[in-house]
Image (cartoon, rainbow, N blue to C red):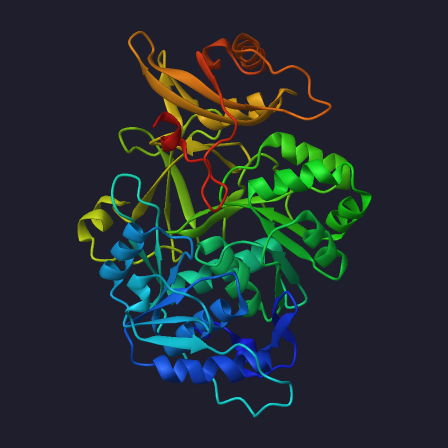
Length: 486
C-alpha cells in the first residue's frame, strides 16, 4: 500500500494549493477533502468538472483518498465527445464547483458541490483514511480520438506514485519547491504532475488560472522555484524575455524550467538561454505511460532531447519488424516501446485496443525517436503523422520543423507527408510567417526549401509549402496535423 500524500496525514500548516488569491494549507485541504471522500466512498467512478480551480484539486484528492476512480472532464469538451465519455465510464455522480453550469449530459447525474474554503481556525480535520492497494484505479483519463472515439486510459495508483517518485529523483524535487503553472487540469501534465506532484512531495503549487508572462514573472519572483509549461507558453516567454528584464530575471531565478506535451523548438531553447542564461528541461510521457524519460536536473546538458529513461522505466527502439535497435548513433529511427510500473492497466471497455497496444510486456507508444551515444532519446514525431518515408529515407518531421523555425521569416511551422508517385511520400511544410514592425517580406517556398536543404540535407527539403494565418492546436498547444490536410 502506497500512501499518496503523506503530508495530509500530518495535518501540516504548510501551504499546499494556491489558485489566485485562494489557498489551502495541508491541514485545510484535509479538512475539506476528507469529508468529501466520506461522501463519495463506495462509488465506482465519479466525474470531475475539471476547471482550473481549487475545487478541481480538492475533488481529485478526495476521490483518491476514497479509492474512487475519477474521470476528469475538459470543460471545453464537445457534446458528442462528452456523451461518449459519460456512456463509456458510467460515473454515478459528478463533482463540480458551486455555481458551475454543467452541460445536460453531466447535469443529468447526481451532483455534489465541492467546498474548497476553510478558515485556519476551523475544526480539527477528520483522520485521513488509509488508501487502497496500489493496483486500484485512480484516474480514467480520455485520450484524443484520432481514428475513433476517445479511449479511457485506466491509471492505477501505482503508476501515479511511481512517476512522481521517479521525477523526485530526476528533478531533485523536494518539499521546499513551489511549482508555478497554468496547465489545464483534465490532463496528465497539469493534474498529475502539476497538482498531485507537489502534494506528494509535501511542497506547494501556485496555479495561475490563466497563462500570462506577467503572472509567470510575478510568481517566480515571489518564491516560485519550478515552472511547468508547454511549448506555446515557452515560446511566448522566450520572445518576451529578450525585451523584458524583469521576466528574464524571474526565469533565471527559477530552479527548474520544465517543458512537455510536445517538443520545444531549438530556436526557443536558444532564445531563453540568451535572455536568462537558463536551459529548459524536456521530458517525455503519454497518458498511457505517464512519464518515461527526462533530462536530469543533475545531469549534463541534453538540449533538444527528452533525456534518459526515468528510474524503474525501461525503454527501447524497434524497427518496422519489431526487432530491437541496438544503435545509439543519434540517426537510426525506431519506434519507442516502454515497460515499467508507470504503465496504465487497460483501455476501459476495450480489451481489443489494450491487447493491440502491447508487444509482449512492452507498450507500443507510436512515437518515433533516435537515441544518442549518451542514451538520450530525441523524439522525431508520431509514427502515424510525423514519420515521412520519402525516396527510401525515413525522415522525422521534427528536425525539419526545427530547421524551418530557425529561418527568421518563420513564426510557426508544421511538417507532414503526402502521397507521391515517385518518392512514396513528399514533404509538405505548413508555415505561419513572421509579422510585425521588424519582420521582413515573407519568405518564398523556394527560399524555405533551399534553407532546409542547406541545414539538413537535400532529400529533407519540403516539396510543397502552404502559408497559413495560424496552425490548428489543441488545449495543450499540440499542432493538430490531421486538420491541416482536412
